[in-house]
Image (cartoon, rainbow, N blue to C red; front, side):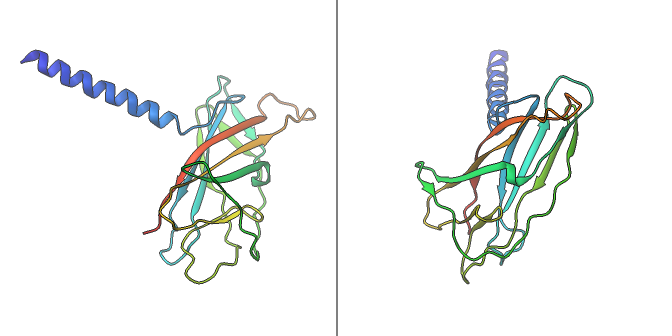
Length: 184
């Protein structure tokens, strides 16, 4: 009887390790002590087609203090692909929106920050159900064709040699694909 419990505990331990490893696969590569990931969520309001997109950054470096990240969405490249790898082209519709200005972000050692990076300026037809709007020309109307779509991208901030500190982050993060939820 005792051996059954040991086997059950081993199975649950292995499942816990596998689950923890799966959670880590959502993060980008680590570059210069920083990693990141994207998250896509359904619209906050039921009648809006605009999905919420978040970026999450985590300081996993080994230097005490705060890393400064000169973030702005213009430093990001995005793409949307279907599960079979097909590329969804951006929408070229009318646009009337503005992206807010960004101040440098300070992120302490082992700190994590998550924030939205969306706009809502794309003109959409009535009945449109799913839109990813990351400021023109990075806008997509997501087909509701039963296929699964993913948002991925990268953030590149070049090294600023005029800056004084090793605590100013530079590098490139390649974000793994984030599943775009299906509209019900």
